[in-house]
Length: 284
Image (cartoon, rainbow, N blue to C red; front, side, top):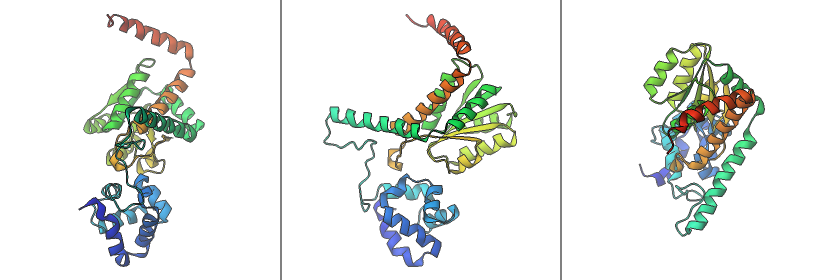
């Protein structure tokens, strides 16, 4: 189905929609491009309907689900503003210097947004869980798995029980063998994939604690997590895996790492000194 047809289809189907579905349509037509940055939970809350109603609305318009609908909105020329597939409002006519300036501003904004969203109590609780854990499994999918690997690498320089687990099947296997002394640290920008919900539920059944780093604190994944840390930066479906969004996640990782280290600075210094000595022979 052509992306640009989404608003036309809403207008065409409007009077066949139920009352609740019309509330969604009204909100989308007023907001146009803004809805592409919203999770299904946020749109449902904004339109004062259930999430299931949003899913039904998307299917009625011919889309497989909410993600496909957002992609259609992002590619539609009928919105109030054409969506740039590059984060930071990069334009074709920009020179390299202007492009660099815009990207720097976008990345700084993402970190600033994340800083303003930080809940100190949540950071402290997450650090408590990580410090007391017997094992910490760092997980994600796609670009978020890269963030999980980065977290496992960083924390491993001071604590020996952090492991990155990439494959979704292997994630389920590892979670099935967790104990109440273990923690799952999961990275998911949307918090709305089937995998994150599956992993969280398995971990909960085993009595393990879960920490989710996400953009959407009201997502299905967040509802299953013990601690939610919210990152900044909005991205459309056409800006998937933007560096700015990852900068927000990396900043949160750094905050969490330093909060853990702050609990015992001298021990962390000793551990990093041992790691540095072990790596010294790797350099020419």
